[in-house]
Image (cartoon, one colour):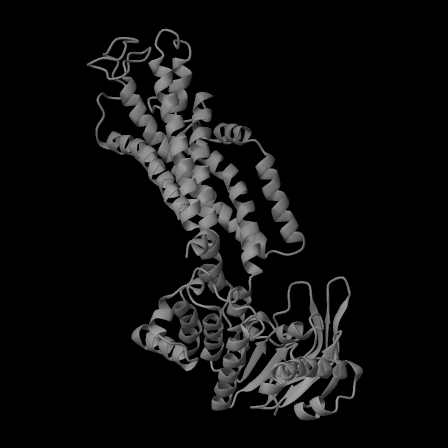
Amino acid sequence: MKQSTKRSYTLTFGCALAGLIALLALVSLFWAPYAADDTSGGRLTGPGAGHLLGTDKLGRDLFTQLMTGSRVAFEAGLGSVLIAAVVGVTLGVLAAFAQGWLDDTLSAFLDILIAFPTLLLAMLIVAAHSATLGSAVLAIGLAQSAVVGRLVRILVKRVLAQDYITAARTSGTSWPRIVAGHVLPNIWPTLVVNLALQFGLAVLAEAGLSYLGLGAPPPNASWGRMLQEAQATFTTAPAGALAPGILLVLLVIGVNLIADGLRDTLDPAARRRRA
Amino acid sequence: MNILDVRDLGIRTADGRTLVDGLSLTIAPGERLGLIGESGSGKSLTTLAVLGLLPDGMTATGGVELAGTQIVGASEKQLRGVRGRDAAIVFQEPLTALDPLMRVGRQIAEPLSRRRGLRGAELKRAVVDALEQVRLPEPDRIARAFPHEISGGQRQRVALAMALACDPKLLIADEPTTALDVTVQSDMLDLLDTLVRERDMAVLFVSHDLAVVSKVTDRVVVMKDGRVVEEGDVRTIVREPREEYTKALVASARQLESALDLRNA
């Protein structure tokens, strides 16, 4: 009992951390202290009244960039997870139902996709299209869909072996109905925890890709590119690198705490134990 | 015509092992047949084969005719029509036979809405009716509960209600009382007995327990290692078993009973 209250704090704290950054992202949709390309502030001014966190080497307001970066981070996280969930669940369910060579082929395909570096995939997609947030999200989402797909395949196989599936079949329920009514709800708790973790990983991956110049092009600020741009002036103006770095860490920690909290509130086994 | 007509049924695994061999049995409408044997004798597989639900990789040979439909070799679509309508199964383990994340009421509603086309308030009433028929107290509360919130005996009654919901011609009970407490067991057997008599439903009762089988059925088939060793009227088999294996079964059942008598004396 004591444990479950302690764990609900995990969820609350995680939501608070991620919520704070989500708020920044939401506000940036309607308002920001300065325009993205406003360079009127002078180069590399320190934190002060006019510019909360100072300016970068081009004279752009850091706080404004940070807000836009929050939005980009959320877009990257949500977009990737959406792709990973749709593609991954579809592949996973198919693989779980497939038998013989089809099952082997799908599993091998997922394993290869997992082994394939996300960075390489991103570079391929960027080479084929262009360096946009969309390309980065597509690359991250596809790479993650392999991880999700493999997890879903195992989860679905385990649920399909349960008596209640046989029981549903003895009453003549069709497979699509069984998947929608029994299989998906039963894999959902584990799946949603994994998707929350994937969200954190996607945010990190997007920062990595923009650091390398494979993410959204300017003037869209991304935490990854802010880090890269502030790298050269870190000793003289550390705020430019510290601020996006700290926000990135906070968001990832927040999302991981949410995943942990969800695991304990959604897990049917844990719920049964508490009952 | 028989409800169930199994002729020379064989069940083989993918690697060629034979689990059930040359099994034949028939059940007439309203008849109650016991299928008895130790674990691993192939009795549960036989019940699954009757509905075309053998695990992946296992194949059935021979013939299984359920209410006029040939099950062996039938398409999934044909089988879906037969399942629930012609035969339904109550499984041994009531906890795993219910979806842990779905409220009991919804699980019973599923076959009701599909088979009888009930919706809304009508469906709700039918669910409560179904729960009342299996003598569950507070059917409204139980309909809203999750499986883990009710007791083992109640869960098995829910499973029975689900099986009866489609009003099948044949009820297959696969060790329905094995996982229950002894006191709950006899209640469950009485209930099962009453319900199938009321509906004039045929029953295939699978168990390893001769005493339990003799309480519910008229005729028994004794299985060992995938084959039928003896078949006949319950009383005849209990009084004068012919085969060695059946004699051993009867002797052990009697031994348990006499142990009880000694304590009473």
